[in-house]
Length: 486
Image 1 (cartoon, helix red, strand yellow):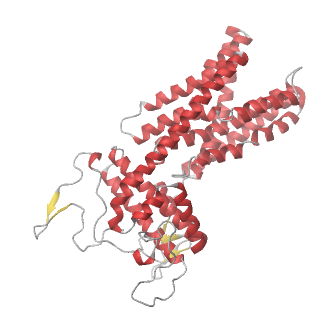
Image 2: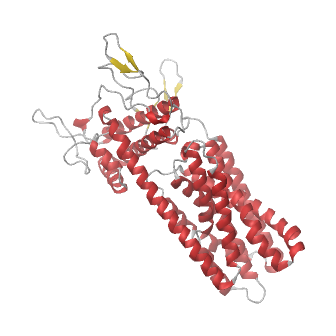
Image 3: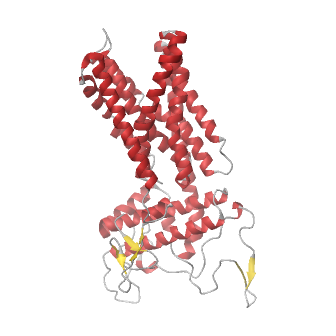
């Protein structure tokens, strides 16, 4: 992450790797900003994610081998496969970049996104090919004939199989990394990644078929297929699976909402089956299919925009309550509320303190955003009061340490000539002051941060207790003059 600190040492010097005690020579755990933001234990390897990625990658390699062998078996050697592969890979970087463009305010861990993409290209694609082929050869074609069997298999057989396999990665995230699914944007982003991986592998097969198709196959048909699948409808599979993603994200961010998962899954199958069925009915059917898909795509854009507004509203509503702690200032809340303000802050940090300062600013922004969304999870009763407090203190600590690291990296101000304390460079988002990133305005406030949201559950906030002096205060609140946990 560019900077790390030894855990348990408030305001300690930055550490590289591990800091060892001179007395016991025992390594101290490293404060891992990335682990805090992702809500996982620091220093612990993510075994399940690593193993899952390896297995999915192995399945993707097997799938590529199957496609290459299939091309060779049809009597055309491996040449069609070698031609189809770059055509399938060509649009992927641009498509992934477009997906990540919608994931800037609260970006998902890159390792999770890579796993979702490889799952789609590996496990989902390989198992789907096996099941769909067996169903076509032994069920639909023997019962209905070749033409009707292929239509029924594509319309009613493939959608449940493929959407189930793609949706499994979202269910795994719900089970193992529920805190990563804060809203519909997260569900759409993960669904888009698994859908892009699946479509990439599927397109290889379609491009091979276009090259080797009897009589009408060749470069012309390959070009037409590439335009239809790689240019005109590259987001078809991501759009289908986004229905499941929205359902899983809703279930993750609300109590007793598991009903949303089968509902989203059913919508994904229905949309997928409608697309496949209409696509087989000639140009008229294909036009209707594109119209439906375009409407759903526009609907997803509306969902993404509204969800961004929701996150911004959370930042503006929840973070001002932390102004008395000194970790957030009014102008910092304004900066955190816009993508442009965040970008300006990171660029300013890089210009004044180099890459480590920019990384510290990024960590501060992400931790503040997670803190705002943590309040909504608590309000919805998704997390318990102890979980809320533990997570909140970790995020507050990261915000403090990130800001301290940034201030340490900044160039020192000129020596003051009067009673005014040195301030250093002024942040562009706070030219008149009001930012915690100005040296003279960094302080500790003798008041605690806001309590657990009252709507989160019974018994919260806790009832006040009586001090020996007769002054009433809430449980967990610090006595006057006592520093709050940072």
